[in-house]
Image 1 (cartoon, rainbow, N blue to C red):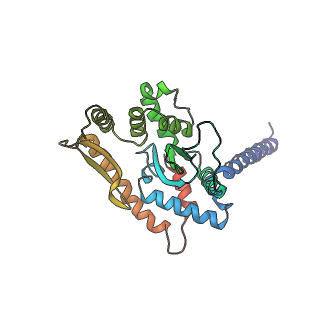
Image 2 (image 1 turned 90 degrees about the horizontal axis):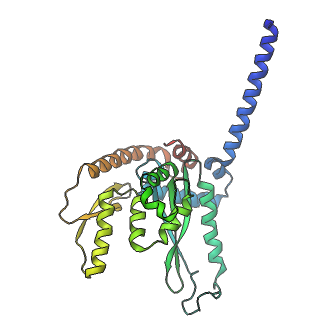
Image 3 (image 1 turned 90 degrees about the vertical axis):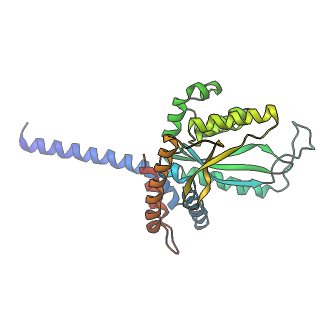
Length: 286
């Protein structure tokens, strides 16, 4: 092939390559949380900023910017939308204030906008409800880690028809509606608690139900930015001494928290939060 023709062909190939790459990148940018955030209204951005910062300051840090927890709770919202128990089951129980539904719908919308290829935000209504109110929990899910724990615990999750390719909202909804003992075990695995802690909690619940006596326990707490206790916490036997697994989790948590404290000073200013930068960092995390 003559040199001049070779140059023209190579240029054409490079041009086509660049063209297709630009299309791919453009398509990705349309669905990337950072691009979605840019399109939100000022009010929606403020709501997202508040949600995201609260999540990072609490245990969701270890889902958003680490792989310690497959899922984490972000926010629970409570609405007077549950059916009145006085109504017969199967009949329509009108909601007194439809604005409550609209308010809830905004959380669903923003959850979709915040979700990306690595992390997904899902809203799951609790099964239990009182006479008028229902709690709806916003979770954040690290998709790859959720798939990993489901594959590792296939003997448990498989009995519900859950596989590693079951959508996150389906996984959580199924576990939410499972029998109490399976619900506790399922959430224990999903929240990233070690096996020995999950086993103890389930056994303690079964014992209490059968004997009526509370099983004494102590709590192993991992620190978050907002505090040192009461957030990423699991129960252990009263006389239990933390083992190497507990210590490894604690060490990983402390390493991530130290890094977050440094990054937080750069991400959160007095009047502005670098939300798009944070969203990019979340997507980069493996």
